[in-house]
Amino acid sequence: MLFTRPTPIASLLSGLLMATITPIASAETPNREALANCALIKDNTRRLDCYDALTPPEPKVERPPASEPEPVNTDQLIDNNLSAERAIFSFTNAFVTHRPNYILPVSWVRDPNRTPESPRLGAIDYDYYLEN
Image (cartoon, rainbow, N blue to C red):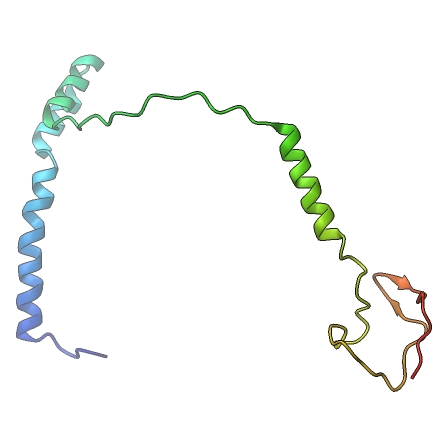
């Protein structure tokens, strides 16, 4: 724990903080009596006018004019996606991932698995002969 009991400096700082925050918060909120008086008005339009009179209007933010969207060439998008998929999937089955050293240029296995099988891929036959 940093403080076990309030120090005079901490008390002074918290008092100054509360003294600066309280006027700011009270300046932003309208008078409670005025709000209660507005709530008593039965006519919807007059009640809204009463609430509007209590708060200053917010400045309007100008939005840029809406421009027409540029035409999209869907054929080009499809071609780009297909070529990206072909590039990604062209490396599928390029490496035999039976051992963790499949990226090394030279590898040696003392007892190669001649009939690899996995739950996901099932039995796989090599298209080349493994030698020790």
